[in-house]
Image 1: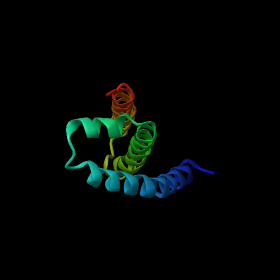
Image 2: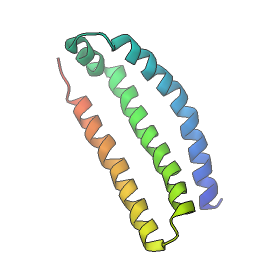
Image 3: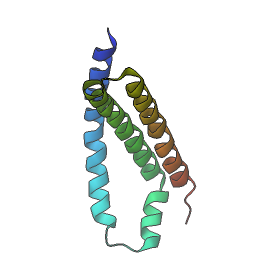
Image 4: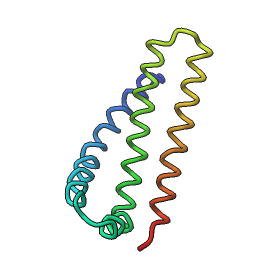
Length: 109
């Protein structure tokens, strides 16, 4: 299986996983929208929420890296610039969710 096929399959799998995670997040976001700070903190401090938010972040950033990487492949013709853009994208896709997950797991009431 070539690299393009693997990316396409990963994109479809991440889409399939993102649908229930986004549904869960939107429903809970609507529920905590008008709540006080302590209640929102309690929601993000609960173990299931930590797991689901972490999974959502990881899968969403994986999905975005795959999608934006394809845009780079299509529209950036200079190979060096394309490689730098892809590496920077991957670095940010690792650092941003990692920092967010660390913050979420360090939340306490």
